[in-house]
Image (cartoon, rainbow, N blue to C red; front, side):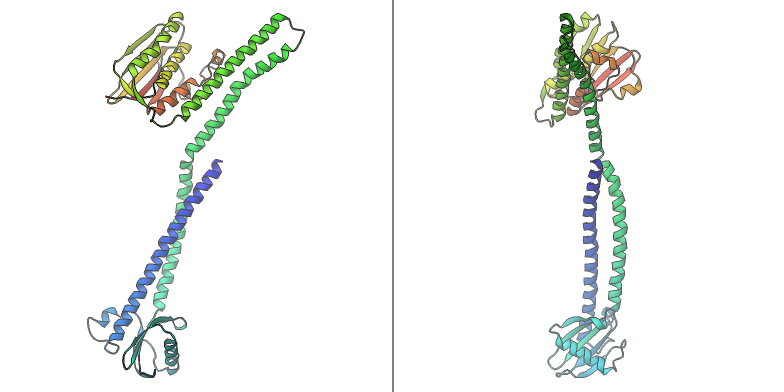
Length: 403
């Protein structure tokens, strides 16, 4: 799919480039041809006004740039006089042929293709003046310009093709990344669902075996119920992640007292930490207001606190701090005393279905919590990251706030 998308991008881009090159180079050829033709006709008109006075300074000499000759004809088409040093005008047969062609055409300006001549006929009361101009150099100029345009067009096309191929990689990179993430997500979800489904299937098959007693059958039922609940939690988290990813825009944002929200989110966890013998310390700056969706922001705090109570060492303390960070930003940090997280694991903590400790899947951890938190924070124009060192694992959330 990605390859087809890149090919489609390149084809569309190069179609536009080819069209633009054709239009631009075509206009160059058209206006050059029109300009050469206009100059030629202007010269012929200047010659026709004074056909036999080529020596007048400042008038004829400045306009004459092409080989030409002049015929002055009588009322019946007879040649009265000729002028022009570029041609042999003694060939009466040629002159008669040219005169016949001119008078057979209703136009006063035209081109005689077989002789590479352009003519201009000026009708006077008692005579006619016909000026012929050689257009061989004009056509040679246009032919050279056409070759140059074709070369420039081909080189430009190849250059744009190379650029388009490079741009296609950059343009489809987000799609490619999303596609890979989707495949990884499906594979990971399938893996997570495979184990409980296997347990449920096996337990159901064993229930059909009459050789097992009532005690064993209750164990099989308990196993089925446990795995079913685990699957339900996983599916709920996957749906929540899909909902958060699909929540776009800031239209539903409202002013939220983030200080009060964090305090309320911490309150239910105080009993959990107390029962496990894990001190929980809070230090929050009052009056921090942000624009966002309160329920989702509270969910971020709950995910970080739940993560801390799961992964902190036995009896380890946890600190929740909230303060302003520079101008227009606030920083929420949840730090716990736990086993140091390796650098390579820090880079993967926010990936979906990633668990630094795979054994945590047994206590209902599927590795989706931090992914959900990251999606929510990003939609609130913030950033989230993790640090580990000195016996502390710290998760930080930076969000824009109102002054």
